[in-house]
Image 1 (spheres, rainbow, N blue to C red):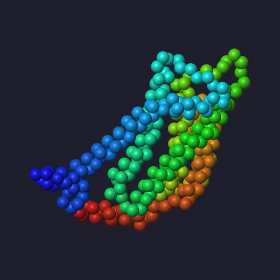
Image 2 (image 1 turned 90 degrees about the vertical axis):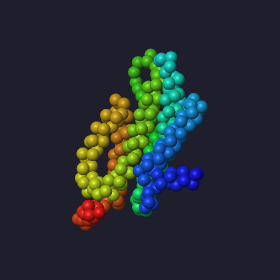
Image 3 (image 1 turned 180 degrees about the horizontal axis):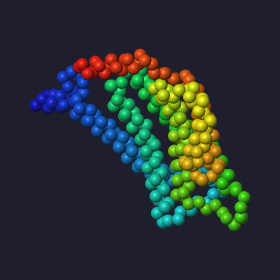
Image 4 (image 1 turned 30 degrees about the vertical axis):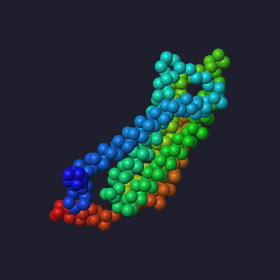
Length: 269
């Protein structure tokens, strides 16, 4: 009886030709989603236990600038502890989720595609971490010192809402993490034959103007924040031009013919 049940379950997952059935794919997807959800829940609980240390880590940048933090609503301080814990749990869950996506798609990928997929995942995570670290170590400390030392009336002191400060930190972390992904996006587009290095060189003047425009939109309304986002973006753009020259793969007529042959063979089948 038990053997029959096992065979029935195996038949639901695997078809006669050895490939996985739709039910099997859905079960695998469910299991991987459960793993991601479990990691997130455990992360939230774990980071709640050390949420005060996370807040100390974020506010340490502003202590040298003599900031005084306050909370303006009774629940504001408590909500920031929950908020930081949730975001930290999401950060921990993202690599696990990306790995689960890779593991789910791995059987259908070629060896070269699997290598490129792993390279993109590792390179992307590394660049995002470098962007966040750059914001934490360089951009935010300088920005906070600059803003607090602006000349003005002496009786105006800096008593910053902890909610607004956390908002600023998280916004800058996300911005710099995404901005530092530019070389990776360029490599992917170059491999697809989209990011042409010659076109990127000719359009660098327009690109710089657009970069400063985007920096003005996504940053707080001051010129220092804009420059601190725009200047690294310009440097990354020039690095992207160099990388596109290495990885650029123009699409040839042979590639189009191969795609047409594949479509014709699939239609015949």
